Amino acid sequence: MLTHARKTHTRLGQLADGGLFAVALGIAYFLRVQAAAVLNLPPLKTIDVYFWLFPWVAVFGPLMLHSQGFYRQPRLTSRLGIMMLVVRASAFTVLGTIMAMFLFRAEFARSVVILVGVLGGFLVYLRHETTQWSLRGERWRHRVLWLGQPDENRSAQASLTGMERESIITVAAVSPETLAPADLEDLLHRESIDAVVASIKGVDTTRLRPLVAVVERKGVELVVRTGMPVGSPWHTTVDDFGGEPVLHVRPQSASPGALVIKQVFDYVFATVLLILTAPLLLIIAGAIRLTSRGPVLFHQQRGGRNGRAFGMLKFRTMRLGAEQERENLADQNDLKGPVFKMTNDPRVTPLGRFLRRHSLDELPQLWNVLRGEMSLVGPRPLPLAEVREIASGNDRRRLSVKPGLTGLWQVSGRSDLADFADWVRLDLAYIDQWSLWLDCKILLATIPVAILGKGSR
Image (cartoon, rainbow, N blue to C red; front, side, top):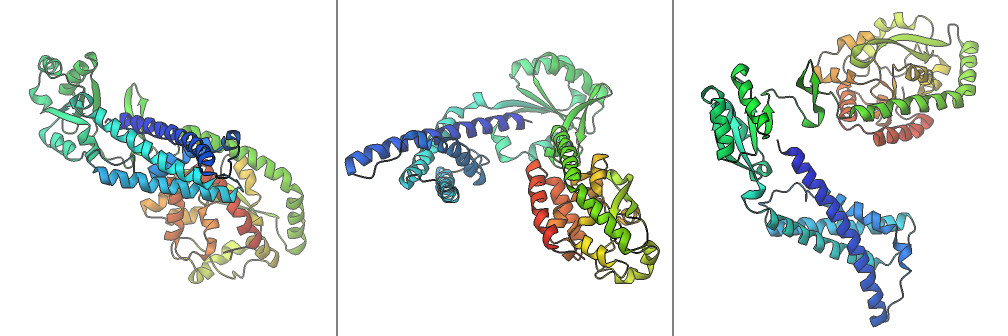
């Protein structure tokens, strides 16, 4: 329920702490200048040289506080515990800033940086104590009415986290079966209810509907518990479907807007790569034609998003009839699971072995990216026969996104992985932790892997 309000308070706290670290830098610079005059210390560079350090400490300071769990701790945490969080975060801020100075060859007085950590930590702790003091008392807590079956009301209250319990006052817990709309209206006024939590599990919605109407008419917050577990809250949004609100559970944490940016990035980057590699593609095509019989390109049906079939393109790296020979080699599969991988596959041509080692056989899939069937980064597409053999639900979740030209599997050892379960684990880690920055890191990491031929078979 009050998750959005809590997130807003957290963000405001982070912004305030960022500003306090910037203020601490200004004070630290002033104190160091005064100390230079009194203690005959070397003079500092002018303040304009330190300008880029202001946004750095304003961002890096709150980031270190977050890494130490400062913004997740409940209000019941002891003062000593809070002080230790702030001290550790301030120390990491100083160390991280000094490391950044070393990497970027920035010459700043280390005394100023150390003072920033000390003063910034003090100001942040002072801000925290002031905020906690101002939030004391019932006026800042939400008065909540629980509306649902008795068992559901008890279950809902028992599932609250410590921080959620601190933010609310339970006024009453009632069943819709015994509460008339007029009685609810009187209760809302008499007890100054801030929010109503309605649990619809086990409740006749015809009895609940007029009560919900009263809550909405009186302008009281309404939180509806569906009673259905939907996994991670980061994958869940509220949408409108058929004229009523519904929960939309996505298989990955990426927002629709971020996925649109990823798609645009795929189109632009794939177009540029196709243009730049066009001479290389022609050379490879000519070499395949000259060194073995058969077509230049290998076309195979693979499983795309949600298992939808598409025709994937590769440079042909095997002799003609290789697909028909696979059954005879099944007992030599090096990968545990439904996927077939074999070291020193006798079907691969000498040129094909070189192309595979350096992933050059995958370049035609840039066309699949432009067709919208694949992405530059994602789980590798499997042949339809192998897709059908995937039985585990978790394993199938790797099909919830577009397959990619490269992915975590390629940059984490590729065929050195001996179990399909490890492959799936990397794919699911990519899906759950996806970001545009992660895509960029994987693309950059693919370059040395492809050049050096690491982990290829």
